[in-house]
Image (cartoon, rainbow, N blue to C red):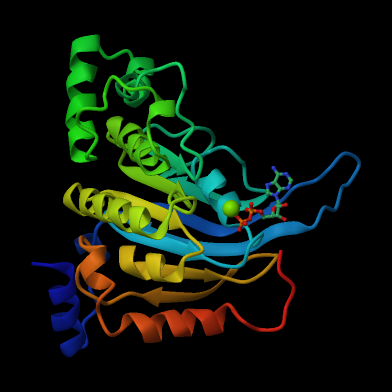
Length: 283
Ligand code: ADP
Ligand code: MG
């Protein structure tokens, strides 16, 4: 039985839903704070503080918040690049103490290696894992086809457009078959149409393969189009001020979800929460 139906029945009878019936918690932040002390500065101010959230396996959750509120810092802690100053971060039920296998990170910059062909860029993670060449070639070609880059495997990054390079970066991210994806504004450098096409590919793959994703964007409609839930952050020291469940269909089809009449009012509510348009400094 689907979790949603179970919830509906349980709430009708006023019954608690046993936790075991839900998907396991994949990402958890418990009272997490992070300060960046510089030399000789013992009491550095916190960039984020008292950050608490849980993400279940298969969920796509977006973080939105003003520039500099600590969104990237959260992703860097989730993927083991930064250690928290206080609190606990866990992924897959284990405390994060360094890079976590089965976790992939995708950034705004495609970070493709210019001297490697697109296929060999996609194969990079598998090569590091020691997978034989023939096997990784098969995986890379399959992913390139799914990311609409068939015919470009032997091209080099400089021969591709920005959108195609970001597609190749997505294929590389998915090549290691991660269970958890951390995505830090992966589409923000792309034009509006390219962005929507890439969102479509990403959303479908996340949905079909039941991946867990924590996504950062400053595009409010993008966040609504792609997510099950949004975490809204305050300005520095950043903390989560609101959690919004996106109870809309088409999580696997953001182009369709964008057309729903609920999108406008939801985006408006987010703008109010973030004080967009209010008379405050731009960073
Ligand atoms: P966002 O992604 O929301 O724009 P960041 O997480 O990048 O914000 O940054 C939050 C705050 O933490 C900023 O004030 C930033 O200067 C600071 N910060 C982030 N990373 C570092 C770092 N490695 N060293 C020092 N300060 C940092
Ligand atoms: Mg950032």
